[in-house]
Amino acid sequence: MGDRMTESGLRRLQAELHHLEEQLASIVKGKAEAADVGGNAWHDNFAFEQLEREERVLMARIHLQRQRLSSAEVVDGTTPGASDVVGFGSAVRVRFEDSTEIEITILGSADSAPTQGIISECSPLGQALLGSRPGDIATFQVGEGPCQEVHILAVASRKEDLQ
Image 1 (cartoon, one colour):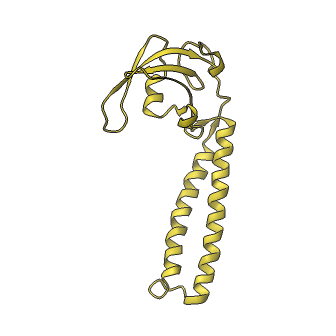
Image 2 (spheres, rainbow, N blue to C red; image 1 turned 180 degrees about the horizontal axis):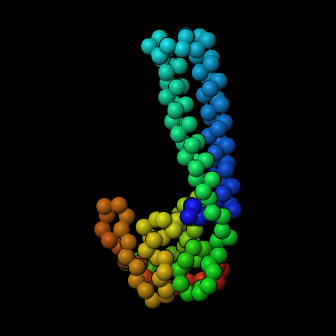
Image 3 (tube, rainbow, N blue to C red; image 1 turned 90 degrees about the horizontal axis):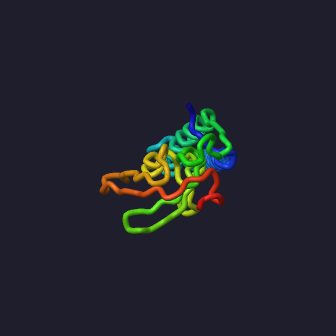
């Protein structure tokens, strides 16, 4: 199974790929100019060598982005079936241990925008919430930090339907 994402997440990845390809074209042009000025031997032309390193990094990023796009599974971002079970596309209201309550939507990593309340299903919190129901307590850990508990207060197929 590929990386699940919405149509907007797919468009975001495509735009990122386009931007990377533009950067690569600029580096290739810069390498040609640097070779004309100082030769293409690395020990004689630091600018050329630096551009070659940047080109390798960009080519690797482009390759990974293309792989991700080729395996993308575009979904509509709504939760099929029971709307009281957290799944891909679910809107969830949770309460953390410090009594902070937030509403989040669980989508794919390409759609993730935590400041807008959208988290990835692959994130520690997203993974902990999947399959939960209102009233459940989910436990998650971020990195080496302490385990945290979050109370699931409400689940809906759309954020507008959270009660």
